[in-house]
Structure formats: C-alpha cells, structure tokens
Image 1: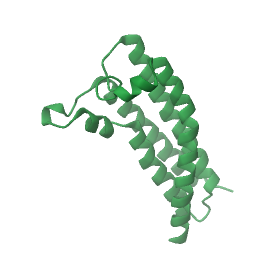
Image 2: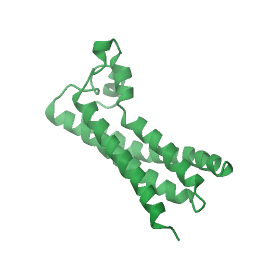
Image 3: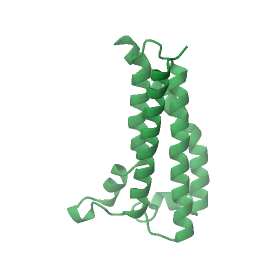
Image 4: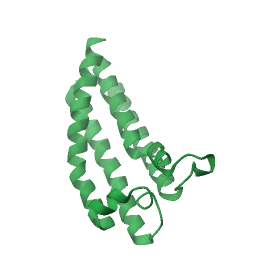
Length: 155
C-alpha cells in the first residue's frame, strides 16, 4: 500500500515537470533566435529550449526517486514517465500544428532542413511525432530501468 505522501511526491514531480515543459514550449514557439544576440547559434538555442531536455531530466528524477524509496516500484515510475512523455509529445505536436496554422517562423524552419526533407509538411511532421512517442517511451523505460537499478543498489 502506498502512502499519500509518496503519491503526492510522485504527482508533484510530474506536475512540476509538465508545467516546465509547457513553459519551454511557449518559449520555444515565440522566441526563435533568443540567444542569437549573444552569438549563440540557433541550433544551440533550440537545444536549450527543448521539451526533450525537460523530459530527460524528469525521467532521471522520476526513476531515481522511485528507486531510492523503500516502497518504490519500477512500474510506478514507468507509468509516471509514460504519462509525462505523452504530455511532452502532445506539446510538441500542438506546436508543430500551431506553427502550420499561423505561418510563424519557428525552429521548424531555418536550421532544420532535414525535417523538411523527411516530412514535407508540418502535418506529416506532427504525425511522425505520434509514431515517435512510442519510441520515446520505450527508450525512456529502458534508460529508466538502468537508473532505477542503480538507485536501488545505492539505497
């Protein structure tokens, strides 16, 4: 049986990461080239304002915290991570489709010519992210298993 404190801790991390990802999505959508005045290439700015980076950091924290808990379960962490991965992909897909509808010049134009070669339209790009969601979750679960196992050993 899980205590309400453990559940609150898990959901707190989830909702904080989800909020940060949403904030990053807004920054990423509206502020292309935000570091350009400092001489930082657009690709680096894109990497720093990346929802994927938020998901990676959250994945590490989710599996570490669960692995360190006495009552921690891998599948509990996996469920929280999968939910967050779905949320993050939904933000990315929404951003791509919003970009298509508004015609705003964002990171999906400019340094990302390879995206245009693989996905000729933003809709095709968004559909690609729905398929990539499964890969994201699988990779996260595999990496999460390693992190969980390491956290368990150091408990």
